[in-house]
Image (cartoon, rainbow, N blue to C red; front, side):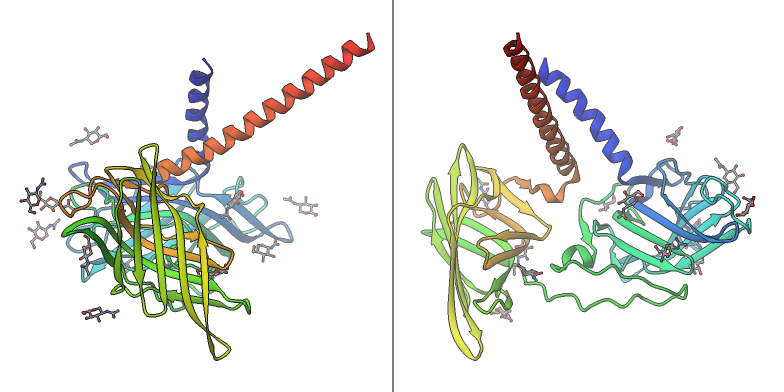
Length: 407
Ligand SMILES: *[C@@H]1O[C@H](CO)[C@@H](O)[C@H](O)[C@H]1NC(C)=O
Ligand SMILES: *[C@@H]1O[C@H](CO)[C@@H](O)[C@H](O)[C@H]1NC(C)=O
Ligand SMILES: *[C@@H]1O[C@H](CO)[C@@H](O)[C@H](O)[C@H]1NC(C)=O
Ligand SMILES: *[C@@H]1O[C@H](CO)[C@@H](O)[C@H](O)[C@H]1NC(C)=O
Ligand SMILES: *[C@@H]1O[C@H](CO)[C@@H](O)[C@H](O)[C@H]1NC(C)=O
Ligand SMILES: *[C@@H]1O[C@H](CO)[C@@H](O)[C@H](O)[C@H]1NC(C)=O
Ligand SMILES: *[C@@H]1O[C@H](CO)[C@@H](O)[C@H](O)[C@H]1NC(C)=O
Ligand SMILES: *[C@@H]1O[C@H](CO)[C@@H](O)[C@H](O)[C@H]1NC(C)=O
Ligand SMILES: *[C@@H]1O[C@H](CO)[C@@H](O)[C@H](O)[C@H]1NC(C)=O
Ligand SMILES: *[C@@H]1O[C@H](CO)[C@@H](O)[C@H](O)[C@H]1NC(C)=O
Ligand SMILES: *[C@@H]1O[C@H](CO)[C@@H](O)[C@H](O)[C@H]1NC(C)=O
Ligand SMILES: *[C@@H]1O[C@H](CO)[C@@H](O)[C@H](O)[C@H]1NC(C)=O
């Protein structure tokens, strides 16, 4: 009974969360196949002249959008995504492609200050346009551009804050790609500053040079001549030395891999010139996971070489069922100790039951899949509710207990 009730509640909550979060819109071509797909969340702040004072209108891109005016494009016209809302407002983006990449060209926000709901007391009632061309950098065709990070774009009187963005134009065969091209802000390990642009001219926003990302190495451990552990991944160590300085070290993708394989415990040992790292994988209840990391790294601190040894045997990262592989395209930060974290990129690994030297069916990490992330949020909300119910129950009991005493 309880389960039944709970599952219904989950469904409702999911709907509520997705309503509050991202808006989804698709543009269909002649044969009804999708040619542009977009999910996004936008907060607008518009400065306008009110009754004697300047006012800020703040509102979100609503759920109920009209795709009227959108087009898939043709020989002489670019695809255009037009999201109309309210009374005469719209956000539009046209697309271009060259050299196997597509990008958003000009993002235009049109607003109508005669809408008294959004712009109460506006002195000049008129339609205004703001155009910028900095929403998305070029990404390969047949991938979906995603940017979960918050990004603010300011132009003239308008500030638009975007987050949870996914966009694919030039969709082939009407199938939205499963391959994501992450925006720089999502990939870079440092939290990117909110970049603002204050002109409406067509200039690319200045971006920091992206941090050097580690190359993906394909590491194999063999049992005799048979591969028994496979790990394709890019690794970056983030080390805090005794002087509290931070060293970010990319592991060479040519590092030598060795190790051993067992039924319940497998080890991958990577040796780079300055670092050796051991990854210990264990099996518990038919799932494998990364339980232990041991790292020895030589660092140059104040002109002398010191070695930092870090290990933690109580981890639980990279879980999947034995017999399958584990895949995570997103960057992950594996905290090992307070001195060492490992940033991992494009992880695909299988430490047990490798058949024929190839990866088995892959289980994706939760980060890659929002449909998993949302239940986690919901789960957390439910857990909170349960705590509240328990507290209420305890208080209730105390009260009634106190009541008996006074009798
Ligand atoms: C396209 O989709 C609309 C509504 O989704 C439907 O009414 C229409 O019949 C479809 N047309 C074709 C050609 O499939
Ligand atoms: C967007 O606006 C809503 C409501 O005004 C606010 O709760 C939310 O934090 C804002 N999000 C961002 C990323 O600014
Ligand atoms: C504008 O403000 C003045 C004084 O603050 C007030 O008397 C007047 O009624 C306001 N007009 C409108 C249209 O709100
Ligand atoms: C309007 O918002 C902008 C940006 O958030 C802020 O700098 C400005 O002070 C606000 N103006 C008013 C009148 O609230
Ligand atoms: C779409 O736009 C056209 C002209 O721009 C207009 O005639 C039509 O009514 C609009 N349709 C909807 C559903 O808004
Ligand atoms: C686009 O051009 C091709 C040949 O270059 C032609 O066959 C096709 O009909 C054109 N499509 C449109 C919509 O004009
Ligand atoms: C996108 O639209 C803008 C104006 O709205 C135009 O200047 C630009 O050329 C368009 N881009 C493409 C690729 O058609
Ligand atoms: C689209 O379909 C064609 C022919 O069926 C196929 O060759 C192509 O790979 C497909 N593209 C994608 C992205 O699925
Ligand atoms: C390294 O870790 C520190 C704190 O632990 C963090 O502030 C920094 O952003 C990290 N840098 C990278 C590249 O991961
Ligand atoms: C590593 O493996 C991946 C996937 O199996 C493959 O696409 C890639 O080419 C390999 N890289 C090297 C350097 O062998
Ligand atoms: C890895 O080895 C290959 C061939 O041995 C070499 O071409 C490549 O430059 C090496 N990469 C690095 C990062 O050292
Ligand atoms: C193993 O791979 C070889 C060549 O790639 C293939 O011929 C063979 O059928 C595979 N065996 C199994 C059990 O998948």
